Length: 362
Image 1 (cartoon, rainbow, N blue to C red):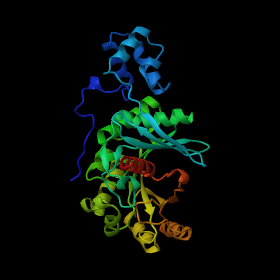
Image 2 (image 1 turned 90 degrees about the horizontal axis):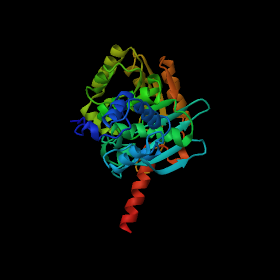
Image 3 (image 1 turned 90 degrees about the vertical axis):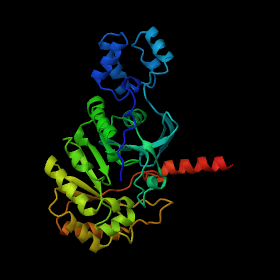
C-alpha cells in the first residue's frame, strides 16, 4: 500500500524555516520577535525577491536584531547549497542541491527565447521504481519539505538571472506521495514568488484516490499523468506500482479529475523502442483515452546506463504521431534538452552517488 507522508507534519511551526511562509505568517513571526509589522513585508521581499541566503544579508533589519537571530541556531532561512552546477550547449542548466541533512536533490532550469522553466523535484529519490527511470534506480530516501521545493525555484532564478515563468513538477519523486508539501509549495510559488498557476504542471504516475483528491483543491495547474503504456500488461512491465493501481482505475480517476475541474489532462508517454512504440500500441492508446479532454505528450526515451531500454527511431516516432492524429488525438513530441549534462531525471544525482561509493571503497 502507498503511504502518504508529510516530512514536517510533526514539527512545530515556530521551528520551521522562514522560507515557505506567507506574508501574513512572516508578519506574525516578526511581531512575535518584538518587531514592527512592516518588517514582515521586508522579510518577505528579501526571501522571495532579493535571494537572501542568510539572516546576516538582510541589511534593512537592525544590526543588533540580526546578530541576535544569527546567534540563535533555531532560526533558519531554509536555503540549500549548490553542490554541483552544469550547463549544456543548448543553455539548459542542471543543479545538484545539498540539503541541510546532507541529502542531494536535483533540479533543472530550461530556458527558451520567451520563458524559463524549472523542473522541480518533490522527493529525494523515488519509491515508484519505474524500470526505465534513473531516479527510480537510485531508490527512495525521503520527502522534500515545502521550503526545499521552493528553494529549487529560487536557486535557478538567481543563478540564471532570469525570471522563472513556468514550473513543472517532473523532477525526482512522485509529487502525490508528498501531497501536503506539494500543495503548500504550489501556493507559495504562486502567491509569494508570483508564478501563475496556469504555468504550473504537476506530473504523476498515479496514486490511488489522490487524483480526485487533487482535483478538489480546485487549482488552475495542469495535471500530467504518466501512462507510458496503452495496456495494463505493458504498464506493469515498466511501472511496478501499476500492479496496485490498475489502468482501468487510473482512467476512472482521470475522468473524475476532468469532471471536477473542467480542465484537460496531459498524458505523458515515454516511447521505448520495441516496448511501447509500435503502430498497434498507438491505436490502443487512442482507444484508451477516447472521449477525454486531453493531450498526449510523447517523450522519446533518453537512455540511462542502468536501464536496458533504447530510444526509438525517428521513423517510429513519426509513425506513432500519425496514428494518434488519424484518431483525432491532440499530440506533441517533447524534444530532449540538455543531453550532454545527463538531463534525464536522476542521472546526474545517480552519477554523484556512484562517485561517492567509489571514493568510499578507495
